[in-house]
Image (cartoon, rainbow, N blue to C red):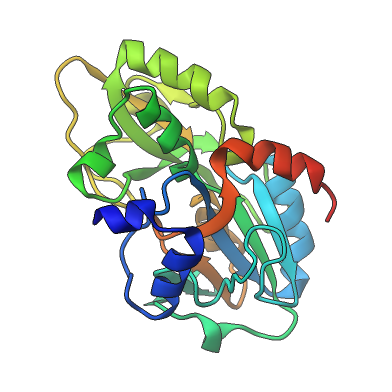
Length: 270
């Protein structure tokens, strides 16, 4: 990634995405600013999904709900959730139907969008603490896995918790736990540290989403709840159409990671 994208403002990065000049994963872009996952559903599914997110706050921390409009109010001054993400997934009846760089043509009247906290937001804090974030160092997308940790069901929504993984030393893992536990709106603390098989992952080098990364001798695998979890639930719920981000390709907000928790507390219920 060029230094310019790391130091660019969220507005500048969103403009480049909107213009089709960025189609890659957004990890490390607009450093310091919170990023978000996306789910857009038909109105009749929105209440059940909102409750599903509420009872599964670790993988699904909602940052903003957008009712009948694709334009953000809280997370960005000029944001459009249909154009400002580098790559989208279109699901039909629970099956992945297409990946596109502009989702405008798939948006239907009355749809409800949910921006959901993203683990990319806590990576800045890890790196500031001297912990290497391997997928960023390797220029790859973060590895993500469907696990045996099941979410609490609501209405038609159910399924496994998807987790993102970052390898590090055991000492770094303990430090990372403390850092991220204080960031509940971007998934909070890890849910597992250690053997991937303990949470149903047969081969850690074959992620369900994203790219594999190097795991060095003496390192442990650290797993965080991931905002791709709703995509697994969508496969079970089978709405006629759903728009999501493509894993690793996020909406970049105008809110600093360091200010996100306080900002959300101040705007609760909006």
